[in-house]
Length: 335
Image (cartoon, rainbow, N blue to C red; front, top):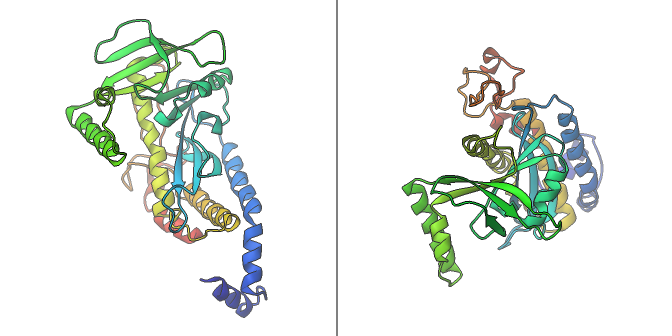
């Protein structure tokens, strides 16, 4: 409903008697309060037992853009930390379009493993994660960091590297895990690079085209516990956060921002997030599972004593999952 229709409905039901301008003013002032509610929902979720894998807690970090009507660039950016065991957001930060994506958007605890895309491969952001007792698996491009190779590597495998972050005198000792893409994946990436370069009136760097054949992951995880195959397998779970972003936009309508005034836009975004977070908790986390299928989807670890990653809630059995409301229905109820 429009503001005027909302006020008429409130008066007809005896809920409130106010003008549409008064309602608009209240909505603009409600953003901090709605933001506190978002934080409270996440804090309550954080009280639940943390799912772990080999003693580590898996988290994904990424950002998504929100644009106001008529905008040709990002107006707001939502930075989300995502617990992969519970399938719930464990941290959310809303910034304007200038808020850069970086690892310091999250807070870390010992035993965390954060998975992040190439935008987060910044030298100064990596050491604080390690200092907090946490770990990272960050994708990178060939020119993202100042690395020095201590050994030659074949087309696939792993190589030890030293990273000078410009802060400490001692460089970080890291692992660069490399996997060669399939020919189809490499060609698709090359086409994307060429298309992006043409838009800017430039020619793609030959080194970028060569790097398109590989996936490069940077990590400080111990090789004795996490071989290269496990690092690559863990990073694939980052896509669960991408799916959560799709649900935010397709089901909760987070990409349909109609407000231009910053205070009103913030209130609108937080209200949508409240509905989304409650709906996610009610619907449960059941990715890639049939309606009456198993309650959990796990990857069997290569290490015989390593716990598998539970991607579905272990509170519900297979029978409980049957007939469970879909996210679309649950989100609609809260919106």
